[in-house]
Every structure is written in structure tokens, then in C-alpha cells.
Amino acid sequence: MYKHFFRPILFLISPEAIHHLIVIGLKIGRWIPGCIPALRAVFTVRHPSLEREVFGLKFSNPVGLAAGFDKNAEVYNEIAAFGFGAIETGTVTPKGQPGNPKPRLFRLPKDSALINRMGFNNKGADAMLKCLKKEKRRAVIGVNLGKNTVTPNEQAPGEYLSSFRKLYDYADYFVVNVSCPNVKNLCGLQDKDNLEKIIAGLTEFRRGQAVYRPILMKISPDLTESQIDDTIDVLRKSGIDGIVAANTTTSRDGLRTDPQTVEAIANGGMSGAPLTKRAIEVVRYVHRKTEGNFPIIGVGGIMSVDDAAAMIEAGASLVQIYTGFIYNGPGFARQICKRLIQKA
Image 1 (spheres, rainbow, N blue to C red):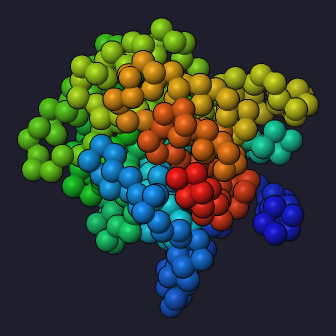
Image 2 (cartoon, helix red, strand yellow; image 1 turned 180 degrees about the vertical axis):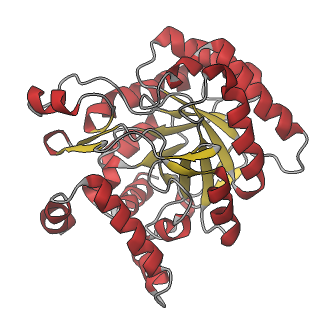
């Protein structure tokens, strides 16, 4: 029903406007007696075969919502009711920022894809802290960390550390995002020297804390194998706990959408079906190079239950969805979980 009735109606409205309406709806649902528990009852699947323990955390199921939906940690418990085992909030920056000029989010329905150049629009770490303090978490909560756009790369380690310190006690794990193509010069932080400086500050702070919070690195699907090798080398030496593979891509190869439309959209990171093959390849490569000893969250192009199963078969310990959730509807996490039970 969603694909044939609700989605065509929703797709008549701009994607960013729809996103805001959904967030508002979830906030309203929080105050309607029985609304969120009813959603949880309909969409949540529980089974022993779905449970996972990864980087020291226990997940009720391996399907998470990727960063970008709940940017400010405003509706993490409400969105978890749609059957997710984890919600990754953010990307958060030390100070709030408006992001890039609108329009900045575009659908490519012929390709089951999205192109975004949001630019880390968020309310800042202080606002996220207030939200995370408010409620008991009903799923594993991750925080995706970024730097403010105006901050020079040489000052980036301090920015990542600032948000990390502030939010440390209120999240279950953290992801260092240095691979988003929508923030000027951010991808320059993926080189060895910059990565080492960023990670060193985080791990040094963590050593002094009573509770150990896993730190992961989110990498780009556009990296070459040698660049991935360099990243793995840094992460092995640094105390990083896992990899999130992969972020959005700047590639526009093989699209069905007419070139004029794609050219008019211009810059931005693409997610969805065109990324499926590459994201699985990156996960498989990282899994092989690390001999299966490095936890991987597989994300990018999971548009069907088969894609999710293939990502796990490639070596992912957990998976995340976003664009697939938009195109398949609120029951997508449930569908993936049911498929995984069948394969168990």
C-alpha cells in the first residue's frame, strides 16, 4: 500500500518538507496515548536469532537507521518504534549551523535514489545534549560527529573532541564522519595525518572515562583500495572500534534519470540503489583485509531485503538504512528482520 498509494502522494511534496512534517508528526505522536506503543507492536520483530553483540553493545536486531534523519536527536525513541535496533543521530557539529542553501535534497525516482547536499545542518551539540538527557533510550543510540563548515581542517581535531566530550555520557557509540562530500574540504580529513590527530584526541579522552564508548569511522565509497588500506592501517593502530561503510557517493555513473536533470541538481552525495553494488564491495573488501576481526556497519544502497542479506553476507555485523526506508516505507526494517530470521 505504501509504494502504490502513500509514496506517490508524499513524493508530490519536496523531500525536505516531508522530512520536517514526519518529525513533527512523531513529536505529536509522543503525546497521543498508546500511539508509539502501537507502532512498536506493529513494526517490531523480536527473535533470538536477530540479537547481536557488536563492539561490546547489545542490539535487539541488526537493522539501524543511518545518520541524517534524526539530526538533533529529537525523535530517536519514536523512530525506533518502527523496528530499528539502533538509531544513529546527527551529524552534529559543536555549534549549530544552517547548512547549505536550499534546495539541497533531491529525489531520483527512476533510480530509487536521493542526492543531498545538506551540509551538516543541525542545532549543535548543546541542543543535542538536551534531547539526549530527556528520555531513557529504547534502542542503541549512536552519534555521528562532524565539524562546523567554517572551521579550517587544521582545527578539526578540536571540534570532534568538543562534541565527543559533551555528549560522551549520553550515547552508546560515536561515529567520526570525515567522508561526507557535502561539506567543503571535509574529505581532506581522510588522509593519514588528519585521521591520526582526530582519533588520538578522542581515544585519549576516552581513556579517562569510567565507561567505554565505541568509536567508529565512516568512510567514503569513492576511496580507492589503496586509500582504504591506509585508513584501515590508521584505524588498527589507533584504537578505533569499527568502520561504517559507506557514505554517499559523488559518482553519477549508470543513472536512468536524464542527464539534464542530474546536471541541474549539480553537486551532492548520492544514496540509494546506484550505490548498492559499490557499498557491498567496500564492505567485502574491508572484511577481507581485516580478516573479519573488525566490526563493520554496512550502509548504502540497501533498497531490498536481499540487499540487506547480501551486506551481511559480505561481512557487515550490522546494517543501516535511510534511502531504502524512504522508498519502501515504515515497514522496511520489519521486512529485513523477518528475512534474516528465515535465513538463520
